[in-house]
Image (tube, rainbow over all chains, first blue to last red; front, side):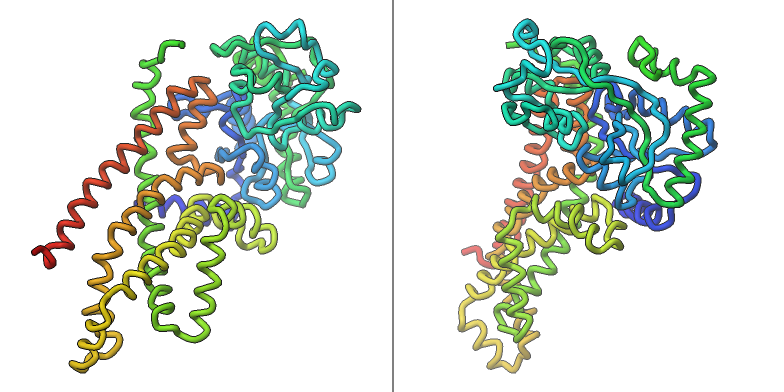
Length: 247
Length: 224
């Protein structure tokens, strides 16, 4: 009980006085293998990446987990300082936030229940079907911007869309190719990639577009350059994906 | 039918149990605050205190008339956009605030009914022996009303414990949030959710046993 209040007090204190060296990093904690929880331990590619990054810049990282669709709002309102959750650079987001250089290059991928991959071979086969995407994700944007978007029944989820597809409640889901490949490889769910990846996406760390945010961006951006040059970033990528997805 | 992964479930038990204290703490703090607020509102309604009575009626109407989830989102995501200083409110505080206000509205009505339900003769007798209104309330009416209201209030507490699970939508990693994350990482949804259901159930059953004891205790003076 006392600990709860202490934690609440600390949280309140940390939000009112943002210390220069503790960076509050938001993530969902439910997006395998980028950020996920096993046995109460937050882990994944993003966690390793941030830890390596603050090692280089000499900062401290404090991970804050919340639902994915709440992350952008939390960054805007100053509850967190940046987001490490495969955030894709989009023109809309660039109007509000400043980004570091990309640290993951990836593509959008249609994923279906195993056995349906001959029937659905890419985004144009999604006409007249039900497709799951993460609420507030760039994949939702991507689908809605397709010329035939009105023929697709787009359903948004906070999480568990892989399960929805495996159970056959939706015909497909759209995610990044890397995560999708890992989910198929590492989990018991009967899923398959449908066709090739479409539309390149670049992931970077977003910051508030103010003096403090830009200063933090510049510092961490330099850190990413170091991680790319000394090979640490591709090492982390190899560990989680068995491939270098950072170039 | 796939076989259950019992090893995974067993491994998850200690992990999830660590979150029970937070769930109980949120519910208990909200319950105490809601009881105080509800009692005040009930007295305002019974005594028909001018101005406050109208405000109380409006408050109860709003918090009973809108879903708890809407209230939580309003506090946590909505209001900070309009009043930036509210950003300092973290998820746990917002959840406890939402639960307090929501359940206080319900409890105020139960407590009011219990107070009104105390026989008029008790009121008249208290006043005739020269008690002030405050003395009468404190010594005669409220203790009797408490006995009538107790079972309903415990019921609200049970509801409140379960409603803390909504706090995960505000990014609080409580019992439900922790389960969600574990399930999203392992993809063993059935195992994770059946386990968390059993944990909530066990908490509520424990409370039900305590409720029976409380009722026996409060009923002692009236045993015939």
